[in-house]
Length: 179
Image 1 (cartoon, rainbow, N blue to C red):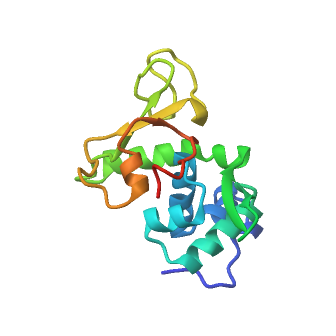
Image 2: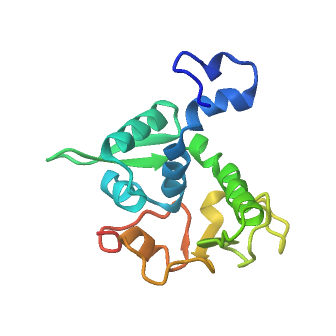
Image 3: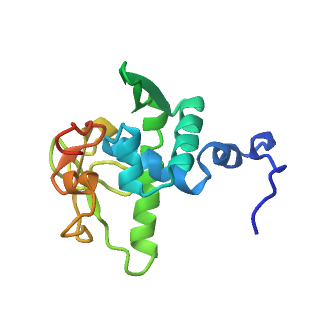
C-alpha cells in the first residue's frame, strides 16, 4: 500500500524516513547511479534508463534542488545543460554499492552487470566500498567499473556500450562514445 500525498517523511525524526523524501522514488536512485557512472546529459539519461522525459526532468530538478546534482549550462544556443554530481551526491555511492550487492547476494538469478574495483590496485571492492587488497576506503573517483558476468553482449544504447570497457566512476562520457 502506498502512502498518500499528504504523508511527509521530512517531518519524521528518523533519518532514514527523511532521506526517503529525497531518494525514495523509483527512478531517483537509478538517475544517481547513472550520474555516478559519468552520465551528465539529459538525452543520455533518457536513452540509457528508458525513463519518460517528464519524469526524468522532474527527478533531475528535484536532485538539483536537494543538492545531489548541480546543473551547468554547457551550450548557449540553444541552451543545453548537464548535471554534475556534488559531494552530497557522491556520498550516496556506498548506499548504491550496498544496494547493488544486496540485490546480487539476496535475489536469485541477479548476476552483476558491472563489478567495481579499486583503480589503484585492481582489487574488487568489498561490501562497504573498502579495498580488501590494500585496506583503503575508496572514494568514487578512485573506483573503476568493469563489465560483470551479467553484462549484455549486445548493449542496446551508447551508454551501455561505453560501460562495456573499464572506466572510472564520475568520468564523463564524451560525445563520440555516447551519441
